[in-house]
Image 1 (cartoon, rainbow, N blue to C red):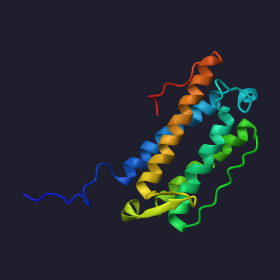
Image 2: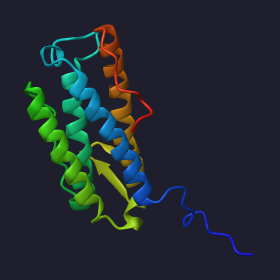
Image 3: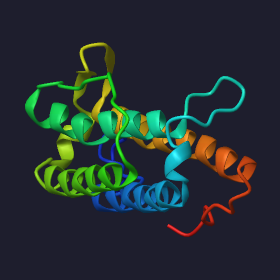
Length: 160
């Protein structure tokens, strides 16, 4: 009987991780669609940032994270302008396409490489990608709280 070395053990394939992430992105997109446009950049509870700002942060992290991993160029603007919802959704869709395109270019061994994301966050590539996913889930949760407080039923979290 042979066993895989710890470095060769795989808990999830790159394809499955991408599908997991894209499932979250589809759900977040539905949450953006449900959010009232006039509240995107104004509504806040308990000192949390408005959902529009959180979405812009997600856009700043997701595709730019993969771009940095692939090229070593960590370009991200943390200053966000208030955009209309249709433009946010257009950028979200473009970001989704960019993630799919760049993911296909990333060899599996690159997940174990060490990077310093955005010039300040050290870690392995897979850790950085998990952070991007976790960040989206966290901010989407804030969006759920906002929608419920506004009396709007959010999309079912399990329908990705």
